[in-house]
Length: 289
Image (cartoon, rainbow, N blue to C red; front, side, top):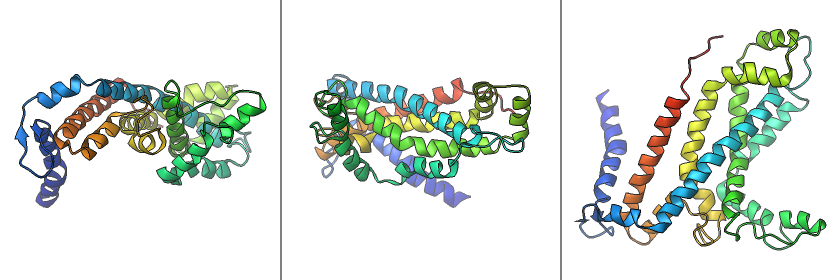
């Protein structure tokens, strides 16, 4: 028991302690770290880019879990109990096994491949997929990733597209554990699919939904990979898509390790606060079945 605790303290706790220490220093990686007190925190709170990044993380935190959960729950319901019943047993829509593979496929793609795909989709001229479709209707090309007002939404759409498959599988596993007799009883009582989803599926899946919400929230506070490889000029244009993790990366590349760890500490507290709020506000009694 002692060895695992020592390893956990050395590889997990100690790096956190070091990060907190370096956030109060001016350190460029090679020379001895110079203690500067709260100067890095003053600089961070006076930095407009920091507040832009926090705002963008907040927007992603609002939209990514909401859109992903709604779409994934809808597809999971269709794939498991949305079809016609056979011999009194609820079934998914025809071809549900194939659709599960299709939905999960984006999870298998590396982020650079996703970036290449969506660079073609979002290309700002008529050769782009979206602008090509709009061109048929006489709409002028849109700069999906170069218009500051819509660039962040386009990146969130990619995050949702990539995340849905995993949560469809997660919710499908949860739905498959719900006894078929419950759905059969609801059907005999004349419950519509919408009523069945609202009164049976959602309450019995609440534990899965809570877990998914926390995972997606943590992913929203990260969002580094998609922003870094797909956005214009790594967080652009004009910082309209930057997030905290991207600013940490830029500060590290610039050799400002002390300031980078300060941003990292801020990200830690934001993520931890969200996780605590999410678990406490969504806590419900477990339904046994």
